[in-house]
Every structure is written in C-alpha cells, then in structure tokens.
Amino acid sequence: MKRLLVILGPNLNMVGIREKGVYGTETAETIAEEIMRYAEDNGFESEVYQSNHEGDLIDKIHASRLEFDGAVINAGALTHYSYALRDAIACVNIPYVEVHMSNIHAREEFRHKSVIAPVCVGQIAGFGKHSYFLAINALKDILK
Image: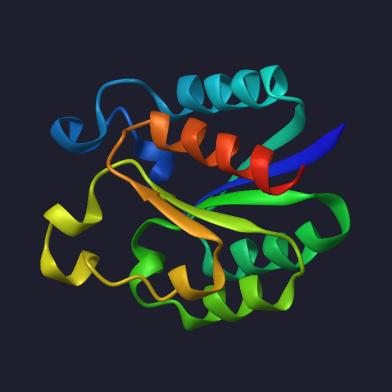
C-alpha cells in the first residue's frame, strides 16, 4: 500500500475556529479524519502532520523521503515566503502537491505568490476541505 503524508502548516490547527467565512466551521480534527479516511479509500496509508513551527515542518519534509511515496502540503502563510520550506521540498525525491482551502488568488495580494509551487507537482486551491481530496486523487494518478 502506498504511503501518503499530509502536512499542515501554521494556524491550520485553528480551522473551524478562525475566519469561519473563509475556512468553514468544521474543525481541523474532523477534516484530518476525513482526509485519512479518503486516503485509505483510495489505496493509501496516510498520516496527517500539523505544526506551527517552520523547523518542525522542514524536519518532517526531510523525513518524508524515507517514509512516504507522496505528500500533500498546505503550508499556510509560509507558502508565500518560506524559501526554507521550498528548499526542503526540493531536497526530497517524492511528489508534493500544494493545497489551500481558500482561493489564495482571490484574497490579499501577498497571498497570490507561492514560493513552494515551483517545486511541487501542482497546486490546488479554493475548494475547502475538498482541495485535499483532489490532491489525493492527483497523487493516486501520479504514483501509478
């Protein structure tokens, strides 16, 4: 069975509490459970990892090369300025799909640019929790 990592960055533990008009009312825990169930239904053993600390995220990305076949990453605000995350993803030899629950291109201008997109196989944004499901579908096809 293929192994899938889902990485959630800063403040994504607050989904369901913060900016409900943007992120909805479902809790981060409920969404993580749905992601894992969806991944399993699509042939993946999965892990959801969340951290508010850039260094912890980098360590997890580095470790992913040995433990996982592919990964989904919602780096939160780090998407827009963390060259360290970008370089970490570039270091590993597994496909990463960048995900955002909100449409980052329809929000504040600083959110329009992703520094991690160039080292990911693709970007999915704007479909709420379904963005994660679409990313899982993409990785399923990529990893055939």
